[in-house]
Amino acid sequence: MGKKTNPMVKATNIHKVFGKGLHVLSGVDIEVNKGETVVILGASGSGKSTFLRCINFLEEPTAGTIEVDNIVINAGERGKQRTEHILGIRKKTGMCFQAFNLFPHMTALENIIEGPITVFGQEKKEAIRYAEELLDWVGLTEKRDEYPSRLSGGQQQRVAIARSLAKKPKVMLFDEPTSALDPELVGEVVDVMERLAEEGMTIIAVTHELHFARDVADRVMIMDGGNWVEEGTPEKIFNNPDHERTRQFLAHIL
Image 1: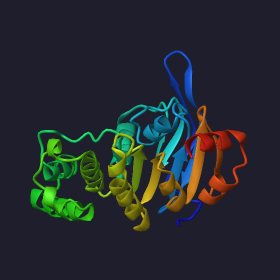
Image 2: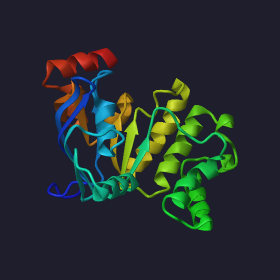
Image 3: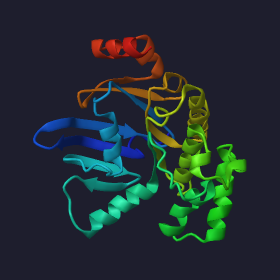
């Protein structure tokens, strides 16, 4: 793991208010070290996905500071440098959503090479070479030229992960990546997430896949009402939680 003094991701005092006073996040802090896997658990509506989306500014924090791999942005800043910093953070973070968000008119391969070519200016030949490596890595070499409509949900999500990895991110954010999948397809996506963790990717995952949280996470954090109520090792959280709210939540999902 990286040094505690220089985390890969650091969020400080993050608030998010929607509309006229819906306070979804209330001063949330996190530090995630290089190579660490952190799983965020919590009931629906607790603020987990909003927090994740604040890290790469898909949601604009109302207050607080986000830092990813030494790029620092304070909420409410304006100007050209801020725009560059947000782009910098987005280049360093891959994100996988509940919906697969693949371009329906592009093949699996074309979906993966689109970003590196248009955003990073990569040569097409090089982009294709790396995309083929990624398709092999997620076990979909034979689906290279298939369109999303001809792929199962699990296959689409694996292509989406490969697409995120094509820009060689430092951090992967997963926002309930298996919640839209049929139960029998969940395992193939979780397997890819596990392999990413084993290979040293820094991961922050909002997921209800408890065996991933138990077996792969370095740390589990419980969110309720826009705040952390507890954090600890998987063993501590699942076997001996301190807070009644954590016990109630786990009793509901275990």
